[in-house]
Length: 428
Image (tube, rainbow, N blue to C red; front, side):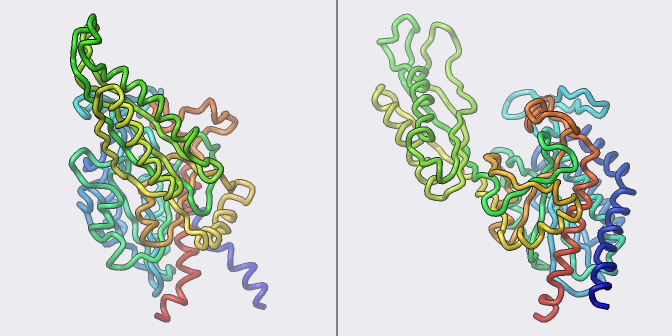
């Protein structure tokens, strides 16, 4: 009798979630297209937040707005006692001018760091918001059967807050998003433009890199371009620093232990062909997975920059901002929940992947509570990953047919987690 009950009762929640998610697909796509056409930068997601808050309010959630500037938090209380699970979506766009040929292409233009640029959802956060709104509607329809509560976190500024402002996951935690009620576990996903639709990839443990931003100001002595011996050339000095920084990964680190990246992303100096300027500024990023490597890379960036500058008669000032820690999937939680993804997507479509040198501020939540973060395919079937435009580029493109799997996955993870842990929670 017990065996028969297990066999026939277990698929019912999955079938119910699948049917509800499938019925919402058109609505989810429309939400996504609207957000895509109206992208907003970090800490400025006012329109997006208003739409999200109105949706959650209509579903009967307890809703808080203005969290970490523009964040929205919705609490769905289940009909039965149990733990609290959180689901998170990021809302911000990027300062990228869109080239993708879609009817809902962004035409938003703004001023960013003194430059005129387009604004685009070039990382798929529009899909994340739309999918989590879909999950909210699915689970709201099942609230009487939920053994616990689900906290929906719509987060601003994952890509980083504007200069001089706080933001993102770190500020949301600071403002109490994981408390009242206290969150027991958190789940999140990221769409991926180079993974085929209906595929999911994941990794236990260190999944995405810790990220730091750094700047190097090299100061020389300005002079006429015809008489370089009369000054100290910060451009030549900077070029030597850029080259030498590449030896940190290639010569100083044991990359069999963990990967690392040191990248210079921009260099600015000079205004005219025949003037050697006084100053050059470089900015870049560091990516690491190991704490020891993290500290050592910081030291080498500083030592290389200051000593090369000194050897040329210049000076170099290095500033390193620690942005996000390693995105670390709790191994026990991942092992326990991966079966849920197998059931939702099919075991053959859930693929163990390598660590990614991209970064995510979801990592801050994982420092506080057990978390599981995975990747959802958004590349059209049959396309090669090398032919698909990567994230943060003007031609970034997502096949919307993959989003319904994201809704099913997050919905089922929340339901299964509550089901698995409701007994232990109610005994406390």
